[in-house]
Every structure is written in C-alpha cells, then in structure tokens.
Length: 97
Image (cartoon, rainbow, N blue to C red; front, side, top):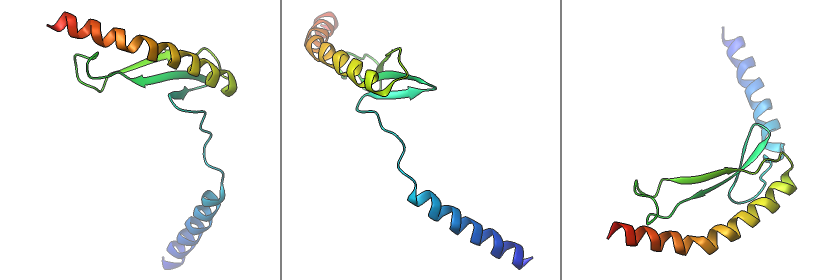
C-alpha cells in the first residue's frame, strides 16, 4: 500500500515540475476574453450607468479568432467607449433625478 502512495507522490512531483516550466497561458490584452475560438471585448460598466451596481459588464463579440485582430478591434472599441462614457453617465444621472 505505501509503495502505491510513494509512486503516486513521485508522479505528482514530476508533473508539478513540468507544469512549472511550461509557458504561461496566452494573454491577448486588456478587456479581451476568449470563449472557444472567438475573442470578446469585456469591460465593467461604471456604477453610474448600471442600476444594479458596478458588477455589470458590456460584452461584445469581436468576431475573430486571430489574436492580433482582436487586440486591434478591442482598442478601437475602447476608444469609442471612452468617448461615449461621459454621455452615458450624464444621461443616466439626468434620468434618475
């Protein structure tokens, strides 16, 4: 019985060392999420926009599986979002008051 446990522990140590040496998972960039092969733009909405708190997200498909295209499309979306964010917050505060 102890030989089986020792062998199991030895195998776990070897596999842990292999996993340690592996490259980290691919990270495409900020606000990018990959589901299956397709990349998505995902950003948390400010508390002023979301009536349910700050845990609401905007999630849009970038319609590509290529990481470089996804980064470019996410950057374009982020610039448009940042330009319009002030308008969104103003509109929401006006409608709540």
